Length: 318
Image (cartoon, rainbow, N blue to C red; front, side):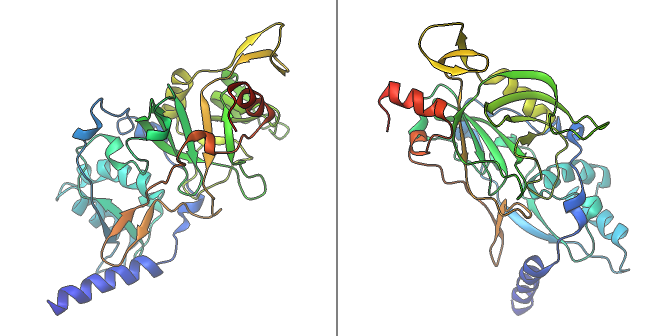
């Protein structure tokens, strides 16, 4: 019993003190995740509970490559190839690539891999305050994740990269406006076009969108926009609704015309740390998934632009 307790204590100390590997400079292989990311099942109550444990990379020969291969073997129950396949989910949940880890680094590993991706969601399955919203899109900056709800029910979630410390993504309540399948960033340096796909704007004046782009594992790194993995960005592009415009009449003016109805509501919440995201809380015995706390009602989030102020006044919403 003492030996077991000592082992648990050692694993916790390693998890708490192990230095971050150079994974902050790595990027997620988006094409490799298409088989993992998915919409939630119709009956969310059928999703099983997922527990997590620590895995500290080790090698008796003090060799990082051998330590990673050992991890794959353990993860695949002796099958290295299966372990490498399962490692994609581990990398996504930890925001760390195994290829950039070293001996002594700690990874959080789920106890099952045979479930829908929504079983790993840090967002609640049900959001009572949003039950009157046909669609609601949420960006949470502390753990760098997003969620989509329909009438208060979670339909999909994923990870994001928001604005860096010099250009943070502003918190607030917005609406999706216009969209474009392909766009070159206006901030592209000369001779180096930054190509964005599945672009959906939610802050017209500042030109802030969600879009597909290279997804860093090290946290907020964009110029204010919100990066999504390709499969997720494409899904949101087709799922969410944009604004409705008219050429004249009363309504909120925009550079595109007169807005007669806003698009899908977007909430940007949470406080980013501008370091590595914190998807898990490192408890002494085992890691705990960082659960997102949502506002009681979406309208509790202050409006982020005059467009939201305008439609709040029409609804009589404070």
